[in-house]
Length: 125
Image (cartoon, rainbow, N blue to C red; front, side):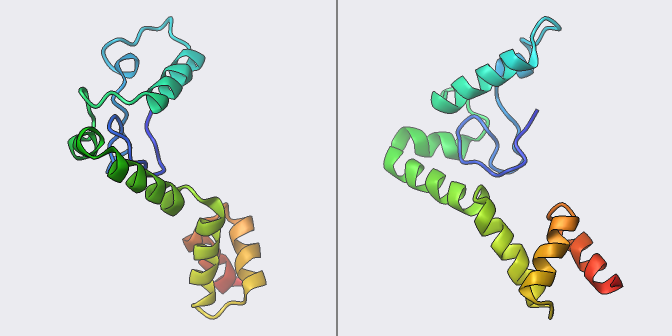
């Protein structure tokens, strides 16, 4: 289990998305359900544990400058977890290649938002 979307959190790698949560590693047992894992992850998101970090840089910022940490976390959320902004960026990318907005949006919709597949689709039609 890992994050695909970049996230600024002491217990999640800002590079790989790996999660530092004991039940996902050495405390995991077959008796744990996906529900248990998700509840534990939700608790970790609400109450970071910077003393046991996955990302030392993020943990250091969390412990020494919570205001800067919150600003960076908000910035990363706006940058990496804003579906509308991400879609607009992809549409703009395709439009810069000479396609109109409607063509770009339709191609992205038909190709699961994948720009490369959308470009191949547009070029083949």
